[in-house]
Length: 250
Image (tube, rainbow, N blue to C red; front, top):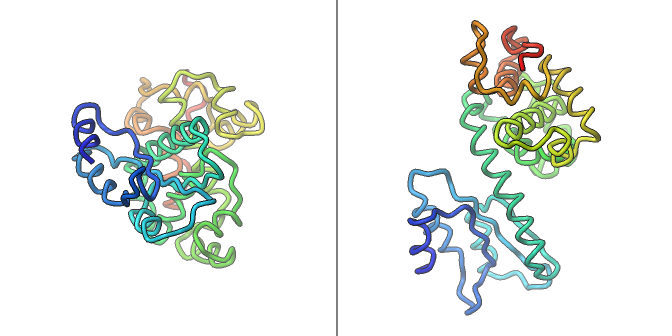
């Protein structure tokens, strides 16, 4: 905890990876609150819990999981390289969800917020409705019923919108080519990504990179992101706003 306190205020904590007990056998759950306290007004520090499959579950494991980590990594044996790669992925996912949730939360019905947050967290893969229902601890029919009650008649369409938001976030926050982003987000091909953007937003991936365009009535929406704006309109049951359907603006 002393090392964490010395490090946090200087460089900030990008993410915290914890096993239930440290090398001396001390439970680590208390470090989560300390890391979040050090973060102060900054975005919540993503906490990752590392549980070895071979280790017996104990009170320290339960205590760590009760801190609501951003993700739980189940490892057969400790492969540091694999753990670091998984950490980078999870921290990137947590940062993405935190960034876009501020834009979307007000338009997401309270009863659908766990679903939307999960779909955003898993937006780097084509997750099925059955898998989402299982992760939420719901039967598939219960999930569909809950969505219809809140005006969403197609769960898969919601998942697709979350993936489009992830595409846009990646395009606007990195310089990687579309082909690389398509691979990272597990699209079947770059063409499939381009077709999804064209079909739902009426534009091209290159247009999504643009943060500001000189078209009357578009500037405010585009500052948020075309995919975010289209998703918010879809959640409200509105047709996609005309100023989101831009065509090629790049």
